[in-house]
Image (cartoon, rainbow, N blue to C red; front, side, top):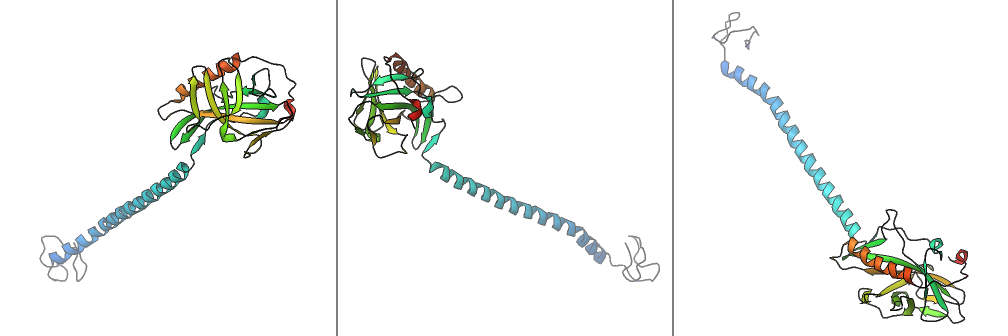
Length: 250
């Protein structure tokens, strides 16, 4: 402690300054010491409060951004997890020829595979469904034009293990098991930038993407199992000779 008047050092037991004789006021000294000690405590408390406020704001901003991203993501109904098969993959050695319900229609069917070896699937987020995709190259060999609406286009595996192309009825879920060996698939033309109709004139080609969704409880494994059944019957379909020029397909 120090004297308030002359600044000389004094003892806690002294009542008067030994140098100037001034009385010592311990209350003022203690108060001054307490004020000096409080300053760093207030600074620490202020810094803690500032950190809390900054952290709260940062957390709110983060969750707001995540919410916006989630809304944006959920607006996309379909999430693709497979790579579309290129038209060049339609080669008759690897794909099965099918015969249409009209004599002038022939085609090749292919089930594409992802890089991991699994069959291609699409996940429909609203509601969540697993969709198997098949791709069919159709050739019109006759003079008669064929007009099919993409949403009604179907492939049916019949009892003779041949495939028939026809204009079928639109299904609510685009999927219907007709029998253990018959499956109906609705498709759309993907070779002509999604035209309103599949129009096959003489020597014209189109690529049809056919798909069927599984219900919300079906896993991808179950969907792949069903698709392999279709693939099996594709392979069992009778082969025919054709002079299809793959280079003309676009």
